[in-house]
Length: 441
DNA sequence: GCCGTTTTCGGCCCGACTGTTTTCAGTCG
Ligand SMILES: Nc1nc2c(ncn2[C@H]2C[C@H](O)[C@@H](COP(=O)(O)OP(=O)(O)OP(=O)(O)O)O2)c(=O)[nH]1
Ligand SMILES: [Mg+2]
Ligand SMILES: [Mg+2]
Image (cartoon, rainbow, N blue to C red; front, side, top):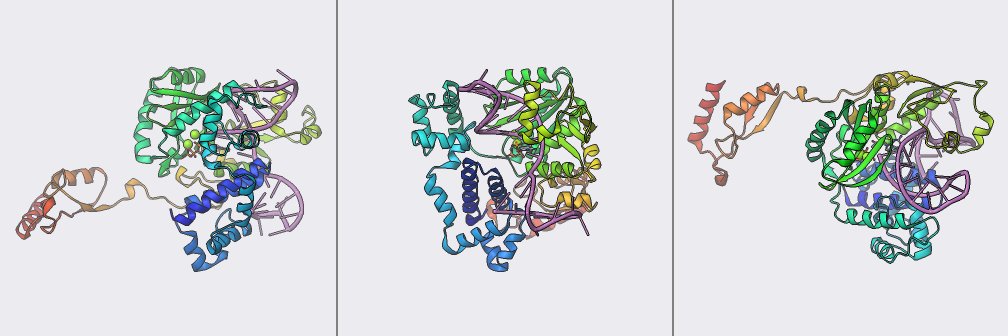
């Protein structure tokens, strides 16, 4: 990523955090969204701006006038006034503090106002001196959790490469398949979307004994820390240095859960908004038809005035259990497969690789999804070295392996004598190799 | 702050888990 993109990602993320501290959650979301776009785009925003002007910035998804002008201001002056002012109010290393599991904007605000905590070291020493437990809203457990979370954070190495995550995940999934009651095990999250880097390993399990799955994971060897565990999910840190999230559901909810857990978050939000527009509600249990003005509906006028989710959990006395019953004014209409859900919403199912809310939903509505390149689409390989120089396998072995992968042709590209250290071929050897190739053909 | 074949203003996803709160806010997925 370009240097300027990186700096702007950091700035917009910090602005998002500060707006959340200030209880402006939609501005927070806007800045996070903007940061995410800059984080994933391959172009350098400065080059884009210099070539095509501010309009090119505004055309980026989730970047509008406001952020485009701030990008322009930063390119021209190396500063953003609004950001500088916000940072004067909260001169805090916000990014490093939010990396501590369980510490978010609201905690950071209190810790700064009450204890003048500005960075990770401040936080650690305050916790060690037992200054945090006495704050209102905090306690002994919170303080201890902070210390543990800092310890794990300090040994963290950042996001994994897909190529490292995938083999590990597959091995882990095999273990889950052996647990009693397990019906389906699937990759989810960025792993299933095949992102180049993976923040954590997300796995979905369909089981008629979800609790057993979660218990077994909790007891697995290599698990160093349980970040959280309940009736439906568990999140752990393992000795390899990363986190695993497992969600366990009943088979009838499997499609909805897979849709939810595959994400991305932005894709989910967009999809759920479409559901609302069509008179549905979408969550990880299914797609629900909202019945209008049913006589036994719970005082709909009162419900409007209260934060919706609070109201619902309040009704049940504790966390709502979707496995048993849903609300009387909601009718389950889809959830066993992803296809059911997307179809009911008027969309083609798209491959996980596309689910980033960057136009794939609009394309799916129009039935104009792009066809992705698959392994079977690869016709040939135009760079192959063999044991004639520094490769490991013979020409014949490479040819057979290529056939096995459905390739129609390969190009043998061994080194010539100019690269002596790899045993480069001289004129005579090249001609010999040609004969060998003709023989095999 | 962003966005729009029902809107250029008025909405903005929805739920699980934890801790310290006695009824829910904060954090995370
Ligand atoms: N509806 C909804 N779904 C979410 C939200 N946050 C996360 N999810 C879903 C979609 C994500 O892909 C999935 C897994 O969450 P993660 O935090 O692990 O994100 P993801 O795997 O996409 O990226 P990562 O590589 O882990 O950073 O959970 C949210 O705020 N709302
Ligand atoms: Mg993930
Ligand atoms: Mg996760």
